[in-house]
Every structure is written in structure tokens, then in C-alpha cells.
Image (cartoon, rainbow, N blue to C red):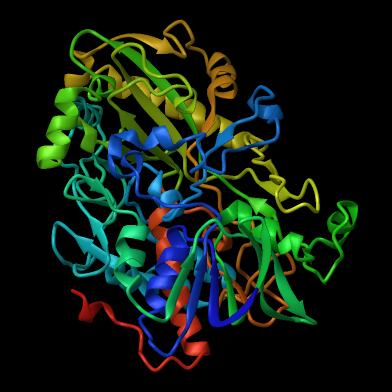
Length: 538
């Protein structure tokens, strides 16, 4: 079966849903959205605290890294959403943009001032419907609902007070004038329910006759006519289909987008030949430069009190169904802190996620006791990895090398992060809650001992980016307008294009990239409906 559209969007995740929603606002544009997974209409997606129940299911691509030599040779789990909303339907809902300096660095690296913080801030404001109202940093009336935690756990408030007692500044808004300090995170929720990009952008657009959404459709390659993309091929119901389009937009994320480029013959020529893919365009940067935020958990038993693992009870569900309140509204990581591993640093390089529950081995093991977890996350990452094909067969998972701790600076910063977590736990109200340290354990005190503990317990925060990064150098994959170098009619619009990681959770920046991408595509196709400014939604 062959069909034609003005635009085909590959992947209905954080970026893809936003693109489909924005582009279909123009009735003159026909838009097709293809998603390999299925529906998001399940309780495990809607109930915030149930997020880990989607892991390792058919709603998860269920990726794993290659064994990581610097992380005790372990292969680490990387969940990625395989359903409408993508990873925004299975993530921890934390709404963080990153530091202003991150975007100014993007502008410097790409040579395009439109990626500076001053220029992207209106896009962030345009996409927001912030429960706190509009101000210089936030917007209202946008599709993405952002709210404060509805029923925060007492230990989450306690850890903020303990951080302040330890000398860290209080920060009520990590997306405001400054990032440094301790506070509660804002969340992509609406009245105690997850608010993914499928909720925010896609569902309001489904009634539009110019938007077609096909689930269970795994794209296998981009169709090329010489140096121009003309559409895509995909598998659905055991059948192979082709669709043609003026613009092909890849929004599969930092794993699937470079994988699809390489399956289409666009990538490092030697590698493609090695796996039996015919080279269409030698683009050496595809799959290179992969970055992720690593975390290290410090876990304590508690003297008294009930952790969130007791929230999944008849009483907890009764609260959620009746009033959308109670422990099941929790995103698990309710409180946070930004700080620096060294006072010489210009910007924070450490972000903490504090969880009033035992979070161990990426939720592979259900909590068995009441406990508290402080995750030290490195947000200024020096190590780099890669995405590579294992086979020319598009159903094979790619080879993911996260490159964790290949730069010693990352290891040293995380060791300092564990020390800072212990410092916070020893003062203020949290000190009265916590008992003995379970991991890495109070007997591990030297930096060398902590280095080994970091290697043994490091995990992913699930923020892969930069595997198809934008720029103008010979290792970049897309230009500052997100067009694939050397191929007309093809763009990548997702987290893979980030020149570098941002200092924070990557969902909000990915949606911002989609907002920018939609504006660029509409301009290229001569849209009759201009992009809305923030003044029209705030």
C-alpha cells in the first residue's frame, strides 16, 4: 500500500506528538504520524507512581547497553517508551529545562543564535500551561500542563529543609532566574494524573481531518531518490507499506533515529558496509557523540514512617480515583538539588533526585522495606558513547555503548555527589528520619572506596542525547534547522540533535525542539497559518 502526505513524522513520542499537533494546526498540511507501539490508554501510564510498571513490558523498547568496562562490566537497562507519548508516557514527569548556559552553548556550537536561551525561552513559555501562572519565565494556555506536586511526601519536604540546613540555597523554581539550590520539582501532570505529549498535543488534534495516526507501524527505512528523501517504508500487521511525503521528520529519539538513518544507508560508510547496508550517503557523525546522565544511589533505612512503597494500597487507589490525591500522585523523585562538585565550576554539574522509597537496580527489584534514596546525577558529562547497528535487519536492537565513566572527571564528580548526599542526610529534619546507610554503606568512607562503589552501582537516568547532533562541523548530522546534511527533505527532530546534554531532565527540552522544528517545517512548506507566539497563549 502506498499513500502520500505533506509530512510524515516517525515516532509518536515526546517530539513526535508535539510535531503532529503543531503541524496539523494548518488545515492545508496533511500529516501522517507513525508509531511502532500502541495505545497509552492504560492505568500504569495514567497513575504517576506506577511509572516503573511500564518498564520491561511491550510498552517499552527495553534496551540495554553493551557491557560498560568502567561500570564493573555491567550492561545497564535503558527504558524507552514504545507507545503514544513515547518516553513522556513512562518517565518521572519532572519538568526541567536545563541552565540558560546550556542553550547559549548550543548557539555558540552551532553558530545559530536562535538556539540561545533568549531565543528558546519564548518556545518554552509557549508550550507551557503552568499552574503557578505566567511570568517572565513561564507561560499559561499552552498544551503542556505543568503543576507542583499534589501530595508530596513529608520526607521530600524534610530533605529540602536538610539541604538548606547544610548550607545550600532554597530554590522554589529550577526553571526560573537561577538553577542552583534545593526545592520540589514541578511536574508534567494535570490534577494528579500524568500529562504526556499524547495528552497535551496529540489527543486535541485527533479530530482534525488532515492528521492520520497509525500505531503498530515500525518504520524500517527512509525512501531516497538520489539525495532526496521521498518517504518511508514501514511494517504493519506483517505487511510492508510505503508512504511518500514532501518532508520526512525522524522523531524516534537518540536510539531509534540514528538507527533508522543507518538502516537507510545514511551514516558512517565503513560501519554500514560491515553490517551489510548499502551506503547511500556517508555521514560519519551518525550514532556518535552519545551522552547520558549517569546516577549513583545512596540508600538509607529509616527509623520510622511509611515510604511510598506502601502507597499502592486500596486506600491509596481510593484517594487517587476519588480526588486525584495521595501517594499515587507521586512521581517518586519529588525533591531535588542543583549544586557543584567544585567551587571553581561556573555552573552546577550535579543534580539530585530524592526519593521517599528504596529505588534499586532501576526498579527491577520491588521495594521490600521502608527506605529513602538520594540519587546523585552528573549533568555536565564529559564521557561519550555511540549507537551502532548489529544487523541490517531493522527488527534487531542496535548496539548501545553509553561510554560511562570513560572520562575520569565524571567519576570524581559522582564520588563528590555521594559525599554531598551523606552531608545532607546528616543534618536537619532528615537526620531524625534516617537510620543506617544501606548502600554503599557507612563503612565505605575513603574516596577510593567510593570510586569502587560508584562503578558498582551507577545506573542511567534515561536521558540519551546527541547521537545525531546539530552543527556545522564534519561530525554533525543535522544543520541548525534540523535538516540532515546532504539529504533534502529529511530532518531529525528529537533529543538526538542536542549538541550537548542539558543540565537537567531532557523531556522539556525535547518538546521545545519539536516546537522549533514545527515552526521550521511550516516555514519551509509555506504554511498559511503562522506559528503562535507566546503572547497568544499567555
